[in-house]
Amino acid sequence: AASLWAAVLRSADCICDMGPSGLAGTLDPITQKLRAYKCGTKMAPSGVRPAVLHYRMRFGTDRGNRGGGAVSVAWGLGNDKGPELPAVFIFASREGKCSRFLFCKILGHLVQMCPWEEDRWFTVRTFFNWSTKMVRIQVQQEGEENFYETEQKFADQRCEQIRSMLVYNLTTDCEATITDVILA
Image (tube, rainbow, N blue to C red; front, top):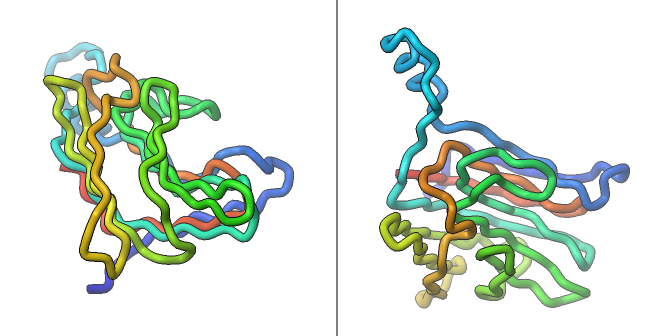
């Protein structure tokens, strides 16, 4: 079934060849303001503990050493070095001329998950276990019956809740299309 919407991220700014660009936002600003109003004080921002992050993505690039289609849920938005205290951080990368892999970042290290094919859709399902600070990640390429599955620690073990979701490209000369995002 076709989706009603899709975020298409194209990075073509030659001035920031290796600079990130995309979308970032907080999850619950209205609720935060209402809570602060009811209490009559400024409250420390609180976050959420989702059980599932699900999305579909297609990624493509003509050049090697490109990365994008990054999806992260984190405590804070962070900076150009990445999100602040992320629970999960997943992205696609093309190394050299033909090596294409999906990675997740765990405790500052990259974990190679599975290959991806140029311009084919794949579905990513992430299941959070907040008590053990582990994520189970499933990736299924369009048209395939089997899926890749891994269980990993949170990207940053200090993450207690999330307030932000980031969707962006890590470098220029790539295009990521992301749709059907569910965070529950």
